Length: 434
Image (cartoon, rainbow, N blue to C red):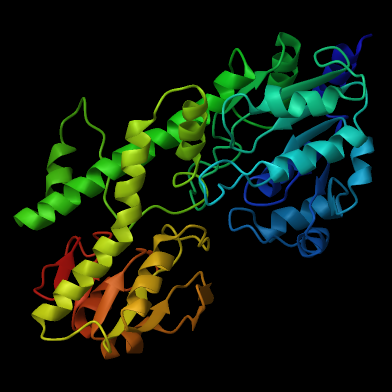
């Protein structure tokens, strides 16, 4: 029995030990799903705090309940460690580490390289390695493969290597790790077959593709599509604002067309790890290939300007009330990058807060998911929205959490700048919409 057959047998009988490197919003839910499917899972992370939390049976990820995590830890199917030498004990391992952009907007692959180097130290025959971190086309074969083959083992024969893009949408109660279709592409056909078999044991649907490059491009297409369309509708919002047209009404009416149109909505800017960042992997790679990603660059510029447009809208709204932005009390409703989650990564609220602060505004904020906010030397504590909104000269809805009482806000606030159309069913002269 060769290595492929041996590993396939282990996987189908749930006898493999699976590892996950990086226990963030992608890696930890994946580890939980595999442990729940019946195999043993070891999570690896450099954060001793995360490791200790998992081993206590607690969850720090909003989409994973502590009860589920605790039951898997108690059953001995899930544990975490900072000791990467334990990689030697796993049969499969998924890399789910961050891939940020540098200030020069080129990919920072240091986390992926560090994880791959650790795996290479303990790579053994019959091992399946899958990269899930979002990256540029060619990463798996150009970066990971040479590191893993350095010790003499051959990909497709001795070990197996795939790429599978993560598609997690934090806070989405309908689509989570288990029921989001999983794309996977391998370096060889054998790699793809094993990757498909591996994911089929825990996830509802697996979509194999012909190569790692195709799989890498899939994620970039998905997020570039969203980023460009959001950029377009943000530009439309600016145009409509200058022409006195309600952009939200325009979009809702256009969305009644049953074909050829998909609604996207404007907002204060882009947030999260994916949409503001992933398209620039493609832009960077395109430049290497001698082409220019003009749509990506233009949409990026428009989206990056939205926090400034929001601040200008606040300034204009205050001016109409005879007040300057300097010295005015401004209360921010919501600072996470999207509704009903606790994640502030790349949140447009950070830029809005910073710009208002530099203009001399006196700031406060409310967010049921974010207790503290630290950004560019600004330190704020979340406060109860009722008293704060009543006392403020202007309230700015940046993140439209469902937990907010918008009817009460309308009663108490003097002036509201609504960047999310949270007040869509309410009519008042005190509401200024994006």
